[in-house]
Image (cartoon, rainbow, N blue to C red; front, side, top):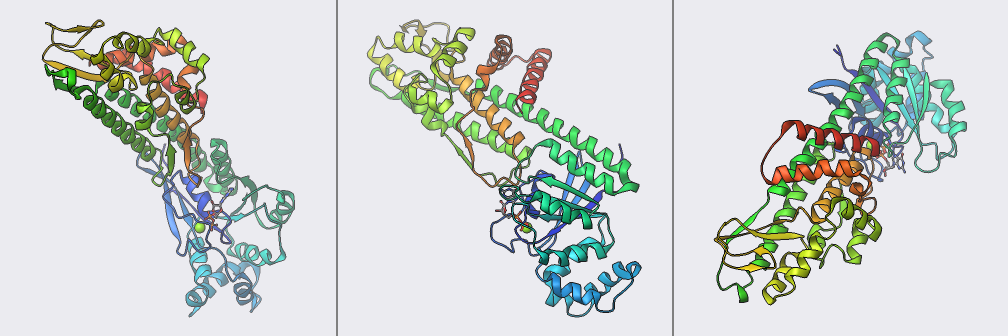
Amino acid sequence: MNIAKPIKLVIIGRVNKGKSSLVATLGQNDDIDIAPTPGTTSKSQSYSLHFQKRLLCELIDTPGFEQADQVLSMLTKDNPSASDRPKTVQQVTDSTGFSHNFPEEFELLNASFTTDAIVYVVDAAHPFKRNYESEMEIIRWCGKPTIAIMNSIGEPAYESEWRSVLQQYFSQVISFDAISSHPLQRLNFFKAVGSVLHERKHETDEIIKLIELRDQHKREESIKKIMHYLRQLCEIEICEEFREDFENNDQPIKMKEQLKIKVTQTERHFQNEIAHLLGFQRLKTSIEDLHKLIDSDNLFHEQTWKVLGLNRTQLTARGAILGAATGAILDLKLLGMTHFAGSIIGAIGGAGAALVTSNSKPDKKFAGIQLAGEQMICKIDLKSNMIWVLFDRIFSYTKILLQRAHANPNTLILEKDLACSTNMTSSQQNILTKFYKRSRSKKSKPEQDHLCFEMLLELIQKQS
Ligand SMILES: Nc1nc2c(ncn2[C@@H]2O[C@H](COP(=O)(O)OP(=O)(O)O)[C@@H](O)[C@H]2O)c(=O)[nH]1
Ligand SMILES: [Mg+2]
C-alpha cells in the first residue's frame, strides 16, 4: 500500500473548543499542549500520524480565532466575486501588518492555504451565537473542502441547533468526543475526510486500512512487552551465600527487600515501556504501590482483595483451578513452626516468594524447604497468587491504555477491574502457567510461546 502524498488537515476554531484535544486523540499521541487556559496554542504545530515509518496524515493544530469580525470586514471591503475570494484571503493575510495585528488569524489562515481540507471545531455543549458566523464565512472564503466537528465539552445539548447552522457552511458535519477514544470515531473521522476529498478517496481508504493495521500492531507489540515482562519476573533471583548464623540475622528480610525493589523496578520499567509504545508521554498515574502491596502481610488479607478488585470467591475459584490457592498459605503454615521460619514468613510471605537452594547436598531442612547449601535464592513463588497479581496489574494497565484517548487529561487510576486473570478459562490460565514455568527454567518453546501470545492477544482484543 502506498500513500503517494500524506493527507494534510488543518484544525481551526475558537480557543478552548478542543482543537488540540482532537489532534491528540486522532494522532494517538499525548505529546501536545492541552490546557484549560486559553492561548495554550499560539503557533501552528504539525503532528504526524505514522505507521511503520510511513507518513499517513499530517494534522496542523492552530491557535483559535480571536478577531474574526475585523478580518471578515477586511476581506469584504472590495466585495470580490466568489471566484476571487480565496485569492483575497491570501492577499489580506500577506498584507503588511496583518501578522502583527491579527497573529492568531495569520497563523491559522497561513496553515490552511497548504492543506487538503479545513477541519472546524465547535463545542456543542454551548449554544450557537451569531458572532460565530464571521469565522465560518472566512473558512468558506478559503474555498477548501471543509469538515465541521461538534466536540462537546460537557453534555451535547445543542447538537441539533449547531448541525443546522454548520450544514449551511460545511461539506460534512460530524460529532466527535475528543476525550473518548472509541476506534470507530477515528475511522468515522477519516471516512468524512474521504467523502470531502473526492479526488483522494482512494488514499483515504488506504489510510483507514492502515490505521486499523496500526491499532492491531500496537496490540501485538503490547502483548510482546507483557510476555517479556512476565519472563523477566520469573527470572528474577536474589542469591546470597547461606550464612550459618542465620538464627539471629536479618538475611532473609534483606533478601526479600531486594526482591521487592527488583520487582517494583521491573514493573515500573515495563509500565513506562508500554506507555511510550502506545503514545503516552505525559500520562499521570495513580497506581497502588506495588511495594505496599508486597508489604501487606499476605495476599489473602482483606485490604489486598480490595486493592486487587478481587473478592474472596474469585480468589478461591482461581486458586482452585490452578491448584495454587494454598500456595502462599501452606508455606506460611509450615514455616510458622519454627522461630527462624517466622522471620522468613515476615520476609517472604507477603511476596509469595520461596526460598530454595541450588545445592543438592542439604544439611538443614525446615518444613520440607531446603535451606542449607551454599546459596539461598529468593524469588517469586510461581504457585502463589503473586505472579497473577503482577500479571493482572500489567494486563489491566495495558488494556486501559489501549482504550484511552490521548487527550484524556485525567489521572489514570488502576484500582478497579484488575482481576483479568479471574475471567480467563482454566485452559487459558494453564497456558500462562506453563509460560511462567518455561520462563523460570529459561526454556523457550517458540510454538508454545506463540500459543500464549495468541491467547493473550485474543483476551486483550475481547476485553478492549
Ligand atoms: N469533557 C471534555 N473536555 C474536553 C473535550 N475536548 C477538550 N476538552 C477540554 O477542554 C479544554 C480545552 O481543550 P483544548 O484541546 O486545549 O482546546 P483548544 O484551545 O481548542 O485547543 C481542555 O481542558 C480539555 O481537556 C471533550 O471532548 N470533552
Ligand atoms: Mg489548542
